[in-house]
Length: 111
Image 1 (cartoon, rainbow, N blue to C red):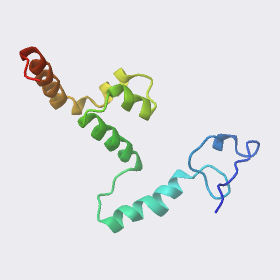
Image 2 (image 1 turned 90 degrees about the horizontal axis):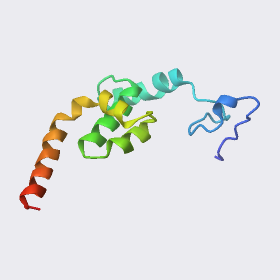
Image 3 (image 1 turned 90 degrees about the vertical axis):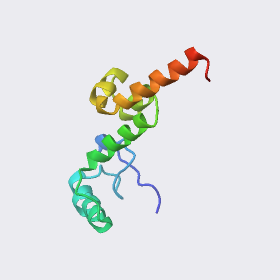
């Protein structure tokens, strides 16, 4: 099926969206969640989470594996890395230990 064309006069809010309906209209989030997302979770035997939780999980995983907070901030559309770090500070304690170990290794000449 060809990509739907968004009529900017009829649906100005849909212009520039990545996902639109087959008619080029904005996706109805409630329809997406209750007709598709929740049934997929149930069939997969996964817990009943919010769609938004996937965003939080992706950001947490990225920070945990060492992706720069600046990059994560940009991916999430946050206004600053400081905001991202405030929101996701719960994943930082082990990152602080890792950072200290790396600096210690450089200072002690063990890298």
